[in-house]
Each structure stands twice: as C-alpha cells, then as structure tokens.
Figure 1: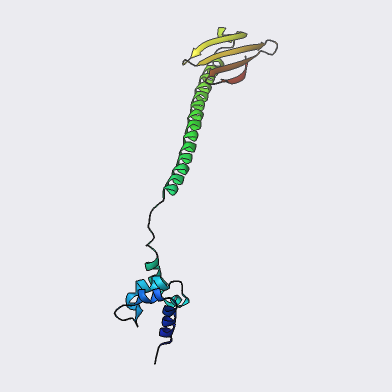
Figure 2 (figure 1 turned 135 degrees about the vertical axis):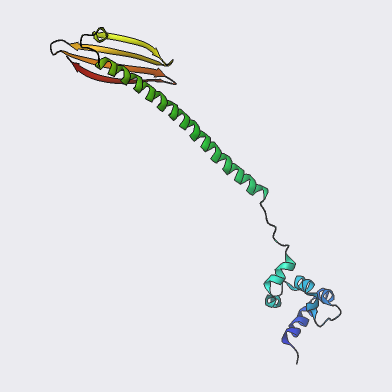
Length: 181
C-alpha cells in the first residue's frame, strides 16, 4: 500500500521539474535523505507544515547571532551619559549646600559666643554702652558686630549680635537678648 504523502510529494515534484531534479538522489523515492535541500525547495508548500519547525528553521536561517548592535550600544552610552551628568549636577549642588551649612554653623557659633560673653559681663561694663560696636573680621570671611540699646527707665538693655559673611551673596545671622540689671 502506498503512503498518501508519497502521492502528494510526487505531485509537488511533478509541478516543478526543477524541484524534481534538485531532490533526486540515490533513492529518489525518499527525498528525506536530502532533507536540507528538500526543506529549502519545498518550504513554501503546505506539505512542509508537517515537517518539524526546528529542522526547517535550522536550514532556512542562520542561527541568530548573540550580542549588541552598534545602535544599542550608542543608545546605552547616551543614557549612561545623561545619568552621569545628572549625578555631577547633584554633586555640585550638594557641595554648595555643604559649604553654606558650614558657614552658617560657624557664623552661629561666633554670634552665640559673643552674646554669651556680653550676657556674663556686669550691667555697667564698658562693652555694654549704648551704640554700635564692631568686633571686626573673624576667620577671614566673617564680620561680627553688635548693638546695645538701653532703656534707662526700666533698667533694660537690648543686645543684638550680628555676624555677616559673603560667599556668592551676602548672608547674616543675628541673635537678640534683653538684659536686666
């Protein structure tokens, strides 16, 4: 008994003499001995849908190469460069913020130190006379000064200590205390 697939095979080969010649070999009744050639020749035919896909794909296509294309590498580098520039910008902002914090801490310390010194002096001390007093420059960038305002009727003195500094703009820190006799 003849296999119905043989009839289909012969019909396809008869339709195209070129295919018949390509697929013939020592045993022309069994073209599967030359599977690679047969798959290439008949890959368009519906009969080939019964041939396992993996075998057909191996002969029709090259194996997919692994790796990255130049475009993928360039896109990755652009994304990396944008990320690195963002990090650099954040670093600059962080350094500026750290510098400002350092100056603010030093100015606060200098102002509090002078205020504590003035609070601990006697009420009639020469440093606590009414008016503007300039302590001059401290640590090369800080200018410290204080004002004393006397309310003689109530025996009160208002002492205001101000420390100023300049980095890219002018900054100042002020503390005020009211002192009684």
